[in-house]
Image 1: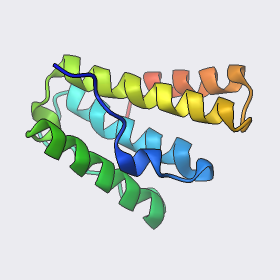
Image 2: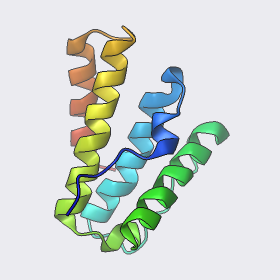
Image 3: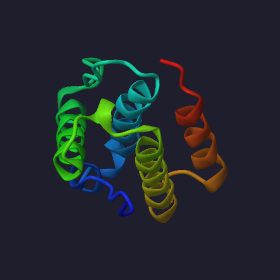
Length: 114
């Protein structure tokens, strides 16, 4: 299986929204890991973030040829890892947070139990 690619909608997200977009995409993927039969995008984020998350989820499903809940735990974990790496790299390269803060943010993403 090929290495997961960070969805274009996430890559093209402005840095001030990147953490939110990443959080909500990871949340969809984690809900699938929890065996939720459907993994809709949350209605919580502001519209621009929600649109980016929906586009990212759609891109993953189109690339994989399957709905998110059918991807399998290993593949879901690979996407989560790729998204977390992208967030860390982007935040550090833009000096938006120091490396310790980005690690803390990623820990929050990993431990989120929604």
